[in-house]
Image 1: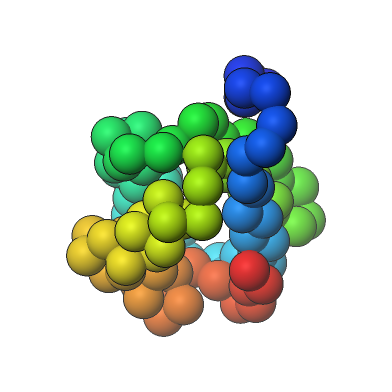
Image 2 (image 1 turned 120 degrees about the vertical axis):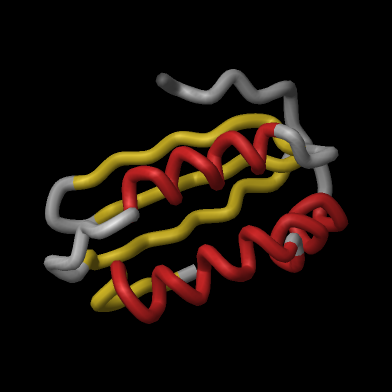
Length: 92
């Protein structure tokens, strides 16, 4: 689904990845993080696509909301697992 964002200004965080062959737990974690992000103040929506390269764009009301999400403890743990298990390469 294409995110329904409000009129500008808002901010987008773009995350691109190349996956490893290890899929163990990835889908469940992705769903958990999307659900958790929706609960965060300032969250506006998300879009994601994957072929050879994965691209996820999340939309936020302001920079403070992005900073809070970046430091949210469960999100930080998921990021660490991604780096260890699921992503051969990633770019934020």
